[in-house]
Amino acid sequence: MSDMRLDVVGLGNAIVDVLAKVTDDSILDDHGLVKGSMRLCDEAEAGALYAAMPPGIERSGGSVANTMVGIASFGGRAGFVGKIRDDQLGTVFTHDIRAAGVEFQATPAPSGPGTGRCLVLISTDAQRTMSTALGIAGQLSPADVPPDVVRSADTAFLEGYLWEEPHAKQAMLRAMELAKEAGKKVAFTLSDPFCVERNRAEFVELVERSVDIVFANETEICSLFQTESFEEALGRVRSMVDVAALTRGEKGSVLVQGDRVEEVPAVPADVVDTTGAGDLYAAGVLFGLARDLDLRIVGQLGSAAAAEVISHVGARPEQPLDRLAAEILGA
Image (tube, rainbow, N blue to C red; front, side):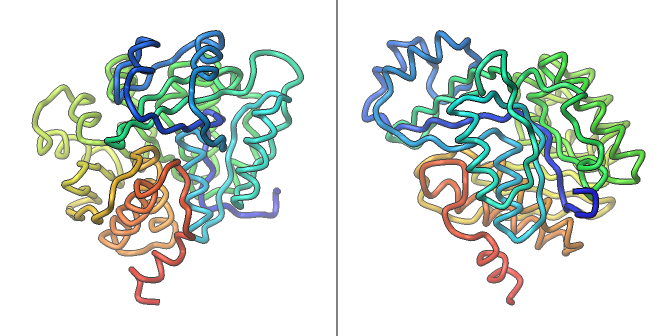
């Protein structure tokens, strides 16, 4: 691995997504779930919900892992660092992410909680309700971060979700330290509005001092700076990082780099499942930045990837994203 250069290495929760469509919302009520939300649950709760779910599909997931798969689909060189158990879901995760072209070297742990899982119920209106049992994914530690892999990447990409777990938080700090020592960039996604609320002061300091590229949706970035004004939040973050990529749902996204601001419209799509939209948007942006493309093109790649993934069930692209890139680039 030491002689391989990666565009991006992602550090995140290694989770297997279990996705199932539901024809009505009664299963949500039965299990006390709020439609459209994401909640953490223990393995017992996950087991009960899993047993009640209709038939679905199982595939490797996790926010950053999804982004790395997207980068590989664009034709980029991506790696992933995460923790799994030597169980059935761990095997599913490893096979899927390697088959997608992502470098993944983790040795499955022989003991401890099971591989993380995210149970996704997709309602008829395309809203997804997620229950996540992190399992051993949340026990990622500095010892699980391979220095040669991090140093080999031009950018290290980290997720806010990891900050919630003490060991994983230290793993993030170690990865950032390795990247900075090697003269590489650090990219960070705020992940979730509630995650921002719980860690606001630390996230502000992190973005200002350690992050080069930040990803957030409108709600998250406004929460970070405790303002209802997107323009105010935009002004605050642009002075802190090299690049900020901020999504606004149907309004598209805004990318800022120094004095430059690019408003990029969303790509129209028949929405089937919104799972992974932000993850694949980040994939397009990170791939475009790795190729030193124009900032507007970078945003268009993100929008195209997000539109592709919301047009079907699941958080991974079903068509090669390099084809979409070729259309945008006119190649």
